[in-house]
Length: 605
Image (cartoon, rainbow, N blue to C red):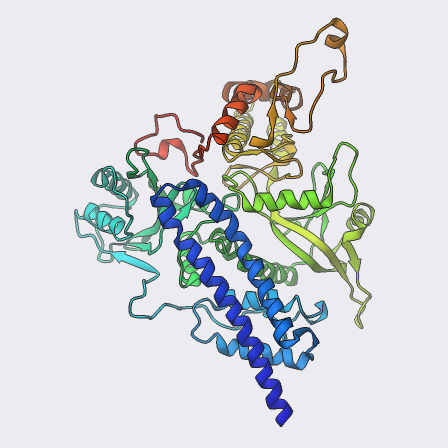
């Protein structure tokens, strides 16, 4: 019995050290998120961008610290598997009454998988399934802030309730005219009510923390009247006059709220004691959005990865189709495959590239990390990055296996069959992102309807206008997409065009935008080759046209709405403004939604 007691004590100490590591992580994560309020109040936009970027690194740093502590103090890698089963059981016990148990379980997995062999990655040793329920968790401390607040406006008192709601957030900046702003909001809310009768349960519920991102702060909540619930978000912005504030718009429902939480936008900073309660509230506003995407949007990307993987395993168990080479034009640096019944694509970096792609695996991974840390402006798809992912071999088409063996053999391992004759395909490194309709295919579908078809014409116009808007939004966030071909953009179910090919992206401020020099003689004029010098970061906007605008219908729409993209002055002007320290506006809603500035030119829409 004595050795067993020693083992139990050791297992408890390891579990306690791991929970200490997680608690330190979430304390730092929450502190940085809470500081976003001060940065917003002081209009410290560069500080806000820097904090959003640096906070992404917090998790991996804390996992590394915890792993090193376990190795140093407990020689964790040398302990038998019987100890690790006890570690997990003790850890579950420590999570009773914890306010972030689901995040703590994921942290346990992150540390443990650095110690154990992959053959032990099952529920005896890690949290393949959650062990602690997150239902109804609330902070019960006397001074604790509830997850959400409720306001009960009486008949005709909606404006007063809205003023009280905004003031309860305690922003230390004056509003330019709060009575005016809540009048706009109240009118928008009344227009949403199904009838003029105020029901007994008429109320406004809002999450207790503001959602900060870039230059905005968002009130997120819902308006309830009878059986009707209307999700809403109110963006609060600086007016630029004496650091005063204004409510800029009122956004409602399934067509507008999910776009704020899109996988193509930077993560919010939100001060949350009980993140699962925030996720539960947000899911009531966006029932179609997966929980993993909501956790991602809140900056809890590792939890998003955990939930995504659980959903993926569940889908594999309840489907029978096979992984295949993804349809569309094949990329030069990425091998892409998908499972038709699953709304994501899997991207593997190839082992070698054609001569025109002067890059390396490390540089490509660096570009994807840049996008992860950068403000994506609603125009660059977020990716989930995994290592050592195992798939059932019998779910892979042979053509796909042959493709991987040909172009990315270093990333492929096929395990020996087990006793039942089943083997696994193990991909050593893979990116996973939301599947979209490639823009070239979307355009081709419109062309197939015929040149005179009104539906096809509208689809072409919408795609081309959105394509230009996407590029301009990326420019506003200091990103040059590099390869701007239609095939590198996709269209989402909300009709937004999003970029997803990152191996050639650069910062706008690192690019040298040039005009094509005038030919000095007839020989240069007629030459089919480039006769002028081109540096590594030189960009010639006027040359985009021949590659992008060969179709006259596309060209007409493009030149009408985005002809400035072919002018070096557009690019150079934005570069100079960014270098001067100006943080451009990229709004996650349409210009006409703005209460006061719908008719005024903005920095970028």
